[in-house]
Image 1 (cartoon, rainbow, N blue to C red):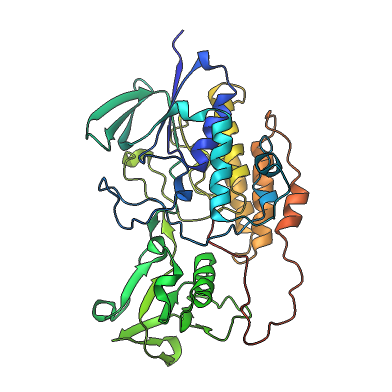
Image 2 (cartoon, rainbow, N blue to C red):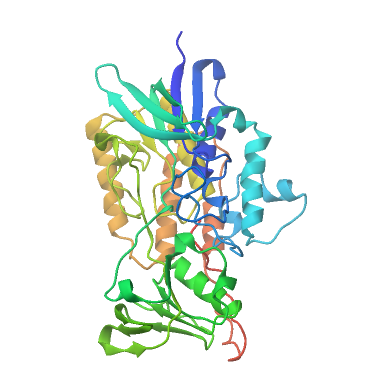
Length: 421
């Protein structure tokens, strides 16, 4: 009997979750391969000094930077089959450093010998599908030798993430600004901006954390320009929030309402990322922005127009590793026939239900979004053999404690809200 051929694109957290799920299946039934374009696994968690393109000429994937800490408590992203206590051999703090999380992800992958599935330095150039044979054809290129290979697969799982292709707006006067302009994707270390005045554009996780890091490491001042509303934290005196930038004139900036601030040395765009899947044939390509319920995906995983194609980790993420695991287990169980895929009408009905549920979540309500994602993961795991999760306890960990008294004006008020995982 011919094995079911499954290709996973990407060996970051989502791809590794899928590999962990398939690792428990009978290998005589499956032919699993994971294509990873870099020479290492870990995806977004692989910090690199490189920006723009890497040594092979490919766009740099990681947006990671020095001194980053998790923005989610470890209790809400812990693998139930490989706990932090098991990993460290002792209790550990709830909020982990970048290095600790990368080590944790890869240690679990190593424990289950997942590297045997991964083809490193393998760039996926295009994915197509033949409806007559129900077979995918994947063309890959060796990043070192440029050798091209063509393989065929029964199922494809895309796990390439969506925090690597920056959304870069432009503003009047940028072309003549004499300082440095960069996107957060290329930010590596706040110490590069010691003594400088920096304009940060954006008002979400990256803007918050980068602004705080800038002043912590000696920036002369930071102005955060928001589009919709200020974050409203008790910032140190060297951070100010203002409305959206309208124009730059030399080093000086003008904002909505006519507000003016002079003398900037650098501009950092914390303006988010785009889903970028150029290797997928147009009819197979997911088109979405960063939202809880990407359109066109049944259960947030199965590409409705072609159920043999699945996307992992493409949602806005409140849960991360545990959600990726749930998606990986769900994809595996569908492929192995352990769960039944509804017909087109049944899938559409379920997709509309989740779309309507998403519409009830206020845009800025983090806890409502977390509750939505708790329900989503519960739904994915119905009938699964994945270890049980205590979502009530995890949601409690996400809740914000009563704020402490305002800090003294000269002190640095550190925040745990960091770059989105």
